[in-house]
Structures are given as C-alpha cells and as structure tokens.
Image (tube, rainbow, N blue to C red; front, side, top):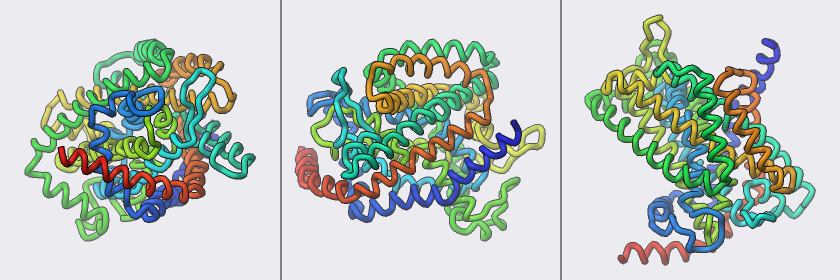
Length: 470
C-alpha cells in the first residue's frame, strides 16, 4: 500500500508540475493577448453586471437559474479550503512571495474562466427534462468539426470530472470540516459525517434550483463574514503591514536579497515561489479546469458573452479578494516562519489560525474553523452539480442522476470519517487531467472566442454608456 501511495504521489507531483502550470497559465496569457486584454478592460463592466438587480432575475433570455445564482453556485465550488488552508500552504512552501504569483496567475485566469464559461453557454443543450446541460464536454461535442474527436475529448473530460467530484469536491472537503470541528470544538468525526450527509442529501436531492438557492445565501454571507474578520486582523497588525508587503513583493522576485531568502524556518527560491503561488491559485479559483463552465451553462441569459463576463468575476472574488485577505493577514501578523509548542513550523490551517488569533485571541481560531466549515460545505454542493452534469453526459440521460446524488451524499460520510491519502492524490490527478482536454478545447476554439468577444463589444459599450449616464 505504501508503494502504491508513493507511485500515485509521484504521478500527482508530475501532473501538477511545471508542464501543467505552464499550460494553464500559458493558455490564459495566449487568450488574453489574442483578446487584446478585453477581459481585463471589461472587468469593471463585469463587476457592475454581477451587482446589478437584473443579475438576480430570470428576465433576460433562457436558462434554469438567475445569472447571479449561477455565479454563486460556481463560486460555492471554488471558494473552499484553498482560500484558507491553500494560501497558508503556498506561503509556507513558497514564501510570502507566492501571493504575488497567485495574483499574476489569477489575472490570466480571468480570461480562461471567461472563455470556458462563454463557450459552455454558446454550445449548451436542453435535456429531456427541459433543463440546461452544458460545460466543456458539450462544447467539445458540438463545436469541433471532427465529431469523433469532439466526442472522445468530451467523454474524457466528463469521466475525469465525475472522478474528481468524489475526491476534490467531496471527500477532501468533508475531511477538512471534520478535522477543523474536532480540533476546535472536539466534535467526533462520525457525528460530523452524519450531519453533513443528511444536510447534503436534503439540498442535493432538490437539484440545481435547491443548490443555487442555498449557495446564493451561504456564499455571499460567508465571504463577507470572512473578509470582515480578515480586515480586522490586518488593521490590528497595521504597523507590521508595510514590512509584510515588503516581504511579499521582495521575496516574489528576489528572495536572496532579503535575508538570504530565509524567514524563520522557511527557505525560499523564486522557482518555489512561482510554483506554489500558481499551483495554489489555480487550485483555489479553478480557472482553466473547466468545472465552473458546467454551472455557468445553467444561467438564464440572452448572450453567452454577457454571462461569460459575469462568471469571470468568480476568479476575481476568489483569488484577488478572499485569498488576498488570508495572505495579507498572515504577512501582517508576523506568524510566518514561527513554530508551535512542539517546535514544528506552523503551516496550513494552524498558520491561518495563528494569524487571526494575534488580534482576535481564541476567537480567531473559532472564526477560521467556521469559515472552513461553510466554505468546504458549499464546495461539496457546487461540485455535486459539476459531477452530476458530467455523469449525465456519460450516460446521455438524466434518468440516472438520482443515483449519483445519493451516492455522492453518502460518500460525504466516508470523507468525514476516513483519511485516505491515496484517494486524495488520485482525485488531485483527475482534477489536473480535466484541465488538459479543456485547455486544448479553448486553444482550438480561440478564433470563436475572439469573434464572440468582438461581436459583443459594441453592445457592451452601449450598456456601459447607459449606466454611466444615469
């Protein structure tokens, strides 16, 4: 078993290694340049669209849920433990400079997220139940001229998505919840497992409308609550913030110039900083993986580009806002590089808890725990929808979706009560493998993406003038 763990761990390290990260960020850079930086230039318009009253209605076009609900369900799947634990891991393994590389990868991730979501809406279908079905697998099936190539690519993406949904979108999240509750509140893992399974079943059996209804309340509430707590911590350590920012920017590009690149127990190189910053950034916002595009396809919209811009803001909220709060709280608190009572360096969730505790005292630990519970549970809900739609694609029918919903909910219990490194590594590999067909798809359809963006630009300019003139 140890040998198998070792082999799977080595494959995991390879698939999430430099080649994968270059492919993910490289696709974003290529598309950003081809689109003449329009997704960046239109970010203000996109944010205005998300926050408008119209985004909460189903007035404009066809779809299953409102544009805002589609974004919140996609965000439910992406704002997860990566925003709390992932950022701390990146800053421990890659130094404070990893945060800068997280931001850089997120900027290009905006374009990837826009492109995959826009294509998913353009090529979506309506199933026998009258529900929208879309995502990279439908884009590949419907957009490629070579139909057998498109169907093969679509099948591979859907298969990897289903497998990833049980691991990264389910077990790892449930395990984070039970671990956090056990550590902070001494709740036995089996109790957490039972409660999570029952809650998941109740919400998931209601399908996308039920999931989006819960996500539309939980995601904004928990994000605001976490951001406020993080800002309090940053303000409480405001005198240390300039030094924290100096370390973040200095160690992103020239760690040797800053104390030989050593920070307490942490030794850093630029390559490590880039690797962990980009990997954790992508892991957190999922730009380029194609998962968010599945949810985007359920949105009520009259234009795929419009909803593409709305969904693109998910990467902005996830990485530029929420991850930054965690990163700045850690940098300003001065806990990076310190050790615990046993003399071990603080990392992961312990690091974030220590940062919040510098200002909030024991309450800081509990706030981080509640954040993990809400973030991770909403990820379970969002990923269920991703996996369900991929499952539906594999069987070419919605009739078996109920089986997937029940099995998915029961697997939550296993995740909460077992630590299965092997399962986690395999699901991590599936997550990376999802990205490969999706990135190939975006590169092959880059002409379509450019055409659609250019077609919508005059409409966008007109709308922008209208709301600026109000």
